[in-house]
Image (cartoon, rainbow, N blue to C red):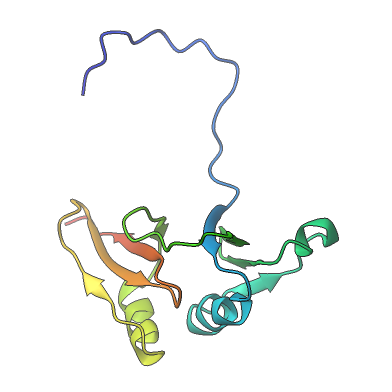
Length: 135
């Protein structure tokens, strides 16, 4: 892709990765989040700072990934927009999700990666992917 308006990158900053991804949830859905993110995925729930805990929602961390689940008054699940989560041992994760009753849909249309889609208990779309081994 070409951009005729490209300029030389002369910035003094660099991006260092994502701190967290936030997904919307409806009010009162924290226990469903704990079942999916904590039990099914095996992530650790984090204690939210008191001022933020008063808003509802919950946070989870696993490996280098942190997911914040925040209450949205007019909640509608993200059916197309989604985080792409890198995983080691993708097949094992798929088996675990299926064992917890979550359907996984494999998709081989992303070059260089194995991947599948799944939905959390609230209908938010999630993509899990793993780079293919070099052949």
